[in-house]
Length: 381
Image 1 (spheres, rainbow, N blue to C red):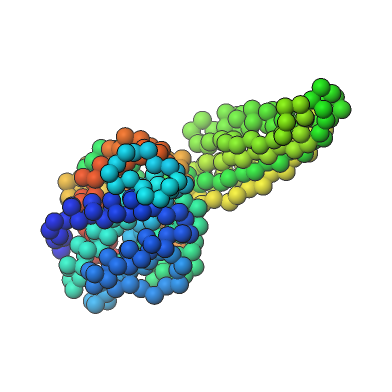
Image 2 (image 1 turned 90 degrees about the horizontal axis):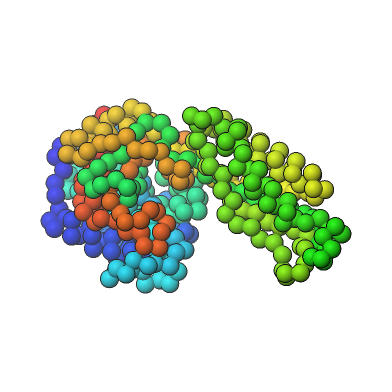
């Protein structure tokens, strides 16, 4: 089955992406974004499925011939970032920005839905589009799953823009491609004192400094050289005045891993080191974990088939370096086989940068690729 072009296809998708870019909404607040997506789907006579989601949309194309169900996921939320791109379609919402390219993902998925709608009567199954909220909070995928929108789905596919890959390139690999992303909070409890009389107190800032340094030894001494892990302490909060030793310090940060065994081992050593250092300084400390998504682990068979689809469309397939960023697409892959891939967008900055942008030439072939992959997957199943 060939995939028809919609004229003017590229311009239409660019207009969609720019509208979304100018009107970003944060996780769990995507009400206008949801309404806009629903309007675009309705205008194209694409049926909207009835699943109980507060924000986000599920739509379907095909099904008249029976057959399997596959899913394509696009995330729709933005970040709390003040935009600094200077684009004519820059964010109109202060302190909010599509700094991770979810506007691009949504427009690409919309394009795939429009393409497949043109061939709907020939589809050997159903393509279910999941316009998912709250990816940045790592909660949206679980909400979609809880709504029942993944029931009956035999395979699921998602994509993410990749600024360091050129337009026309697609990154596909089996196995882990994005990391498990856990957050942590450490509370160190000491005893306050006058800054001129430190021996009368138990300084939680000194303890915190030793903890930050010691935690880095976990990666260098408890994780194998061929494995991967990142521990980053990203916030330390303590004290109220220059001449007061406080009684408490709070440290926040993140742990990133690919292997479940490494994840477990690092967390064990993490807690041992925090407790040991706190005890050595006669203080106490507690670690609270913010459980994030597991690693995104692609199905090897789907990776091979998706590579063949890309090559048929003239895209250059490369084995991408796995990213230590987190992605709640991982929750879908625990329910059903599938693939998460990278689309080259040749951007000037990495994800989450206030001047992040994508090369919009990648939109048209991203949409065409998703549509072709959906057809190939249905035929395979």
